[in-house]
Length: 108
Image (cartoon, rainbow, N blue to C red; front, side, top):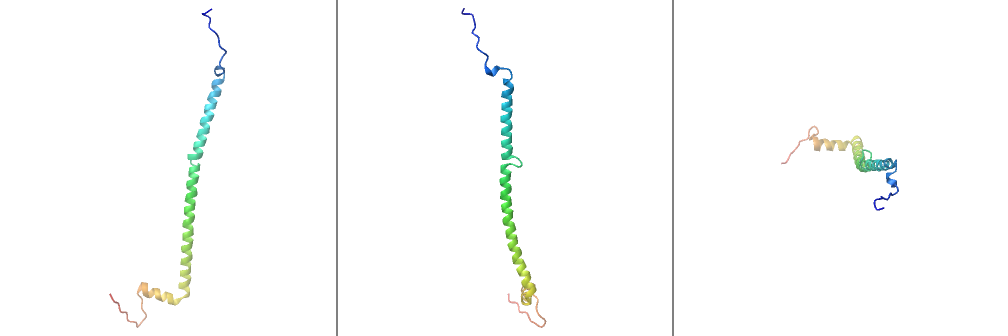
């Protein structure tokens, strides 16, 4: 009786079809990991979204600065159109123009 082998019941892991279930589980896990990786590091992922938001904020700051600069320039244009003495001052200081009959003395 010692030579008789005791047969154990078949393992549930060895049943027909269990390999497919395991493979399907692994493929599902890999697919989920790929989706997670893509959602974080992909072209339209979280990191790209974060970078785009930072770039948008930076561009909005630039736009606000340029709008302030435009307001200053519009005021200068309006002042030049309305004040002939300002135009004369700029012509004398920046362009070196003089009125007829004036004598210019330069000191260096």
